[in-house]
Image (tube, rainbow, N blue to C red):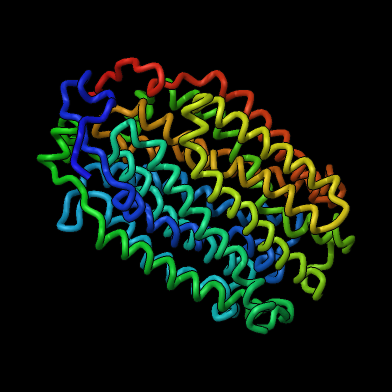
Length: 463
């Protein structure tokens, strides 16, 4: 496809409009996210079950999950800062997600094998340590991908760009979530194991995930090009100051665009809800649907609850993949903010409906609604945000934006477990109801966000 001028904000800043990209180029640029989300899906649907089997008490379960958002809080702004200022033979962003892919694949292999270090420390602490390492590596690989999409696409293509990225995220997550279930029912691999040992189907799923992770990222590294510094400057203005140290992150935080601050509240409610869902879904199925005692964490019935978590997580990710392809059309008709608000309302209803589920099959419907919200959460805030970020600051502000994802998860991690144990009387389903309420709060708050990409207001360049 020949290059043409895109109706973005570049002319108002005295810059050359970026060329539009073909669908194939957008797809290739985002393909690595399939592997990243494959790994995240394995983590999200299996980590709670693994940690419970390693000895974690349900009242402390959310505390072990704290490792992930705390690591993201630190890693992503640093990665964003340096990826803005890096140029190598591989480019600006690609060195970071290549390194992250190699380390993440190693962590996926280690997580279900924590027993190899069981003699050094309590098994549950070793497992939590591997979870922290795994998430640090995921963050190293993930953050530059969002900046790469914003770097290469004009404003007119960013909704499509992030929608394609979300579609690939959904595909990777569907396969990753369902894989342990498929290995049991399709290939006859056992899903049973004694306490302190990860079931074979989960182990093999993590090994396959490691291969998919590094393979998909390598595809993007090899097939995608980035603008070299001289060309980048034509489209984005002056290149970032390569001599600026890490302290400049705090200066950038003070200069945070208004849109980012407003989106922060939306993200806070959304990710508080998601964290509760990821941590407590398995035990909610076990106690609320299967009527198991909360002390049961290694029976065959509990394993079935863990496998069904993978199924319904696969459903919500599958729905998100399909819904992501509809987002550009819906956003064009009713607006970006309205699209995001309606999607979050669907997710809130889905989470609250868990409480009223008569059987595990009903959860397929509940999590289909969650999938609508998930697709929008992965795309629409970044579409709105990218239009407000000054040229040359895409990496650092995408990293800082991650604060609004990690801080609510940390808060939920601190209070979530004690709430379940002391307030909800060991009934984790109420954590999912609270998650649904928070999702509805996110929907209400998005209406008040200022979207400069729609209103076409000039973005001032931060020197």
